[in-house]
Structures are given as structure tokens and as C-alpha cells.
Length: 139
Image (cartoon, rainbow, N blue to C red; front, side, top):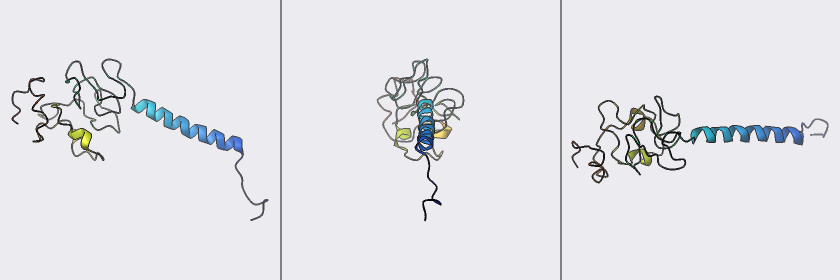
């Protein structure tokens, strides 16, 4: 191929494209890891003052960290493990710290997107059940 027929991208154009892509990535990261102003903790497992247990994996209700294990609000955040309005959905018992949501490496809606479904026999909740008032959890 001759130099005359070869298309080259000017350095300025390449830099602008690169910056545009990086800007989009940065915006996505910021949006997905934004801290909920009321009770979230950035970069950590969310803790809810109103409905969760300090240090638990999933928080219920209105607190959490967007894009983390738990999401806040009525619709959740796309890309997170839990996108339900609350951890108590469809008769579930809420978060008991079982950490099932953390173990999922490819969320396909089989667990998290319907909220916490209650006891699944993992036995990790035994130390937390009284702290969250779950008298009907049998482990």
C-alpha cells in the first residue's frame, strides 16, 4: 500500500477519541459507585441504619451503596447484585447475612433480582438472626 492510499489518524483526533472513551468510563464508574447520601459507605459492603445489620452483606430498604452488593431506592441500580426495591420481597425474611449475593459471579436473575428469598440453608445467618429480630429462622 502506498503512503498516498494509507489513512492515518491525526494524533489530535486519536487523543480526543481516547479522552472521550475514558470520560465515558469514568462517568460510568462514578455513577455505579456513588454513595447514597443518607447511610451508604463508599467502597464497602453497605450498612443500613434503619433496616440492616452493621457489617452485613445486604441491606434492606432505603440505604446502601449504589452499584455495590445492595442498592437503594425503589428500582435499584442496573448491574448490581440486588435490584429489588427492598431485601424483603415476596414474603422473604430480609437480609440475614448469608452472603449468597456476594458468591454470585454472574448474576442472571436467579437470586438477587427477586430480593432476599429467605433461608436457603447456608447456616451463615445463625449469628445474626437475633440481631435483626428473625425469630422464625431455623438453623
